[in-house]
Length: 327
Image 1 (cartoon, helix red, strand yellow):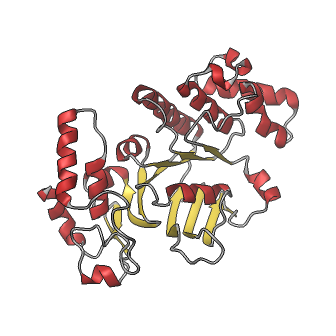
Image 2 (spheres, helix red, strand yellow; image 1 turned 60 degrees about the vertical axis):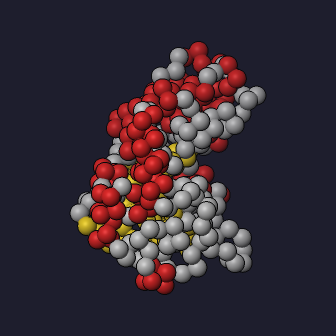
Image 3 (spheres, one colour; image 1 turned 90 degrees about the vertical axis):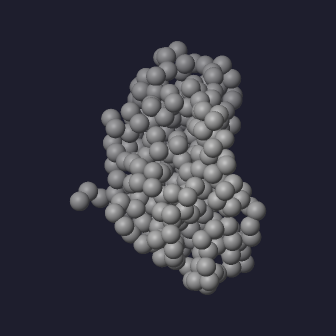
């Protein structure tokens, strides 16, 4: 079996030194193979971006491990991170704020290569190749970010990730700031680059529909814990956790009538919006919003239980199918 390009094991992240608040990420594990996209999905505050920051070294891990191409980078120093930057890159949500407005596109693309001490002639050659790979014209190398559209700027951000020829790219809500037609173009571009270059992509998003388009597998998060994970078709078509059922009902669709039906379905579930219920001090973190919650759910954290292509953390898995059918 091939070694995963990225492996995360039992990751825990606390904000603040005294750990007086619940962890933002609590015991999350997953692997991503070369040529695979893993989607991280959940409501705001579920810990998705915190996981991305921990992988990129922007937030310290409290415990657990992060392994890149077989090398543990959990507590890597800045010098060690400079070496791992070749294989690990990122694309963020807002393409304008992530690009330096006073630099040309060419200067932006060669900057990481300059830090890595790539010879200057090779820097500019690789910058042009990266622009070509994302479908931008060669003259874009002399433009500024203000001269490009939002979709073009996000293509530049993807090109900046590609210039180092990485094996893993963390994509933090990379299409949420784009209109629908541009979203589709960028998602198709990412899928094509992944397949041609055998990239391992960690795709962070809140929209299950977008995650389903690009990802082969998905991890569903709530308050820093994994609620469900597995093959993306199984998770999105036949969710096994009440929270995933609610996320599926909340996913936007382009047809107003179907969207209204989904809204009614979510309201009928009685789950409510994110942030409407306090965090549970013990047991399942979703217990205060779950229509199936029982006494055991309030006292004991449910383990991830596997069945087929998916696993879910729920004490009442046998009742979720009936919940789906009812609503």
